[in-house]
Structure formats: C-alpha cells, structure tokens
Length: 152
Image 1 (tube, rainbow, N blue to C red):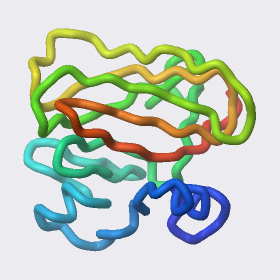
Image 2 (tube, helix red, strand yellow; image 1 turned 60 degrees about the horizontal axis):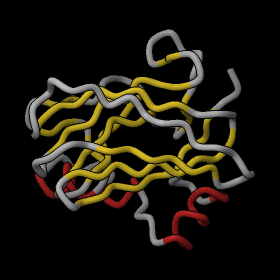
Image 3 (spheres, one colour; image 1 turned 90 degrees about the horizontal axis):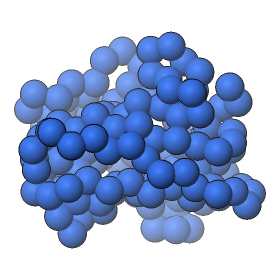
C-alpha cells in the first residue's frame, strides 16, 4: 500500500494490485472510485485516513498503510474496525492472507442490518503482525489492498 516505492508497492505491482496514489490529489468522482480520495457522497475520510476504491467498493484506510490493532480509535483486540462503502449491491465478504509468513487467516466480522448498499462497518482480525492482503467482495466486484499490521 505504500506510495513511495518499497516492498509493499513492488509486491502490489507484481500481483496487479493498483497503487492507492493513482488518483492522489484529485477529488472528482473518478478519483473516489478508482484510487485515493477524501470523500464520496456521504462517506468522508478524516484526518490520517483516505478512501480507496473502485466502481463496486470503497474502504477507509490509514494514510501510512499500517493497521494498529491496539489503537483505541480504530482497534479491536487482534483486529481493527474498518468502514466500507458498497456501491455494488449485495453482502460484503472479507478475506485476508498474510504475505510475509505462513499464518491462519481469521474470519472477519461483517454484521447484518446495513442493507445491501451503502455504508458497512466491519471488524477485520489478524492472527499476527506482518504484511497482509485484504480482499473485500460484493456483487461480483472485488477490492484488494495490502497493509502492514503493527504488533499490539
């Protein structure tokens, strides 16, 4: 998820994962859906975060590309709270895969009651600190990104 090069950007490029900086600095509809932005109708990134997405799904990510499971503002024990915006209709599913070591992915908590489009709060859990790929899927569309999970 790093924009300044480094192993995450290289790993993303090798896997065909788009860089979140592809639309940096733009605040139009295409930036909201195809890269980095600060807002999309009704869903706004606060200080220290940005929106990353495509035509089906948008997620709120930290600017530095690091999830901190013990962070009081974002954290859950062993995981993080993560906000998504579903443009495509359907139930959101989330899968994770550790890229820098062998690890067992833990199931994400995707609560019901949010309808089939719009905002969706989730809890994404990680077994250990490291480099993780996260994939959100809804309505036949997927959104993939890579983050660093900091030690608790």
